[in-house]
Length: 376
Image (cartoon, rainbow, N blue to C red; front, top):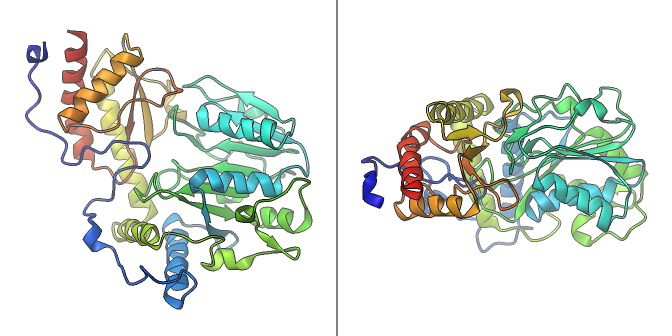
């Protein structure tokens, strides 16, 4: 049956379309990573200098204002979000927004672990909740870009300027690809392995002035693990935001992140990174519009992701999607394109800046081939 439609002649040069860990930056190779810090203590002069340099590059490339502090923390994006939740929640009411699996994860943390009774505002996969329902007298936790549904908040306009609570944004698949309204964000988290194509295990937490004030004026009722502690003797542990990480980081992962950040800076910084993601998403949208068996899970273009683009496939069930993904991987045409396990059966194509638009364009005929093969 595979011969009913021959495989296309041209493959993507870099068939890495996973939504995390994501494609390495163009031109990456392990030989290009700086290694002077390896085998050294992260507390050594060179160790702290490289960690601080990484933080400085994040600030520069992501255009984080001086009002916000940047720290490298353990546990990837999950660790960074949970650090914010465990250290800051409980001072006032909490609202959680969930329209995909990671948002639901923060609901579970709030309800079952911290035993807070939050207001939960939900929407189905592919849709965005009614953001006008949010009560900004509460602390609000949300994903800026829903990685497993391909639905993002269109902007920060819905976040109240006069909010009493904190806005806590899991932005792991949004930063370096979408506009972040820093004046509307009190806490923002992400991880290197998403939009930078970096290695896993490390998270980044960015704190605005209101978050720092919360940390210094409020002590939660529950115990805090050592890896979550951002306050010492009632004051912010400033060293965390100057390269003195809470636990031992992988300096190899740090050097890998530095490579990605230097690449981003070299091509023109944030505007160039966003432009690449937008071009990739547009190329994938052109593929979708040209095929009646493909569709977008996020029906509204205003809230459709330009990074973790989730696609519907006519007649698809879990077995069919697994079969398509397996065929594409066996041919070396596309890796890791099956949708997230908790999402409706479909494909998920990473369109972040580390992917080349030409590779997205080459993907279309391969999707045709895989679909024709499994439905023959």
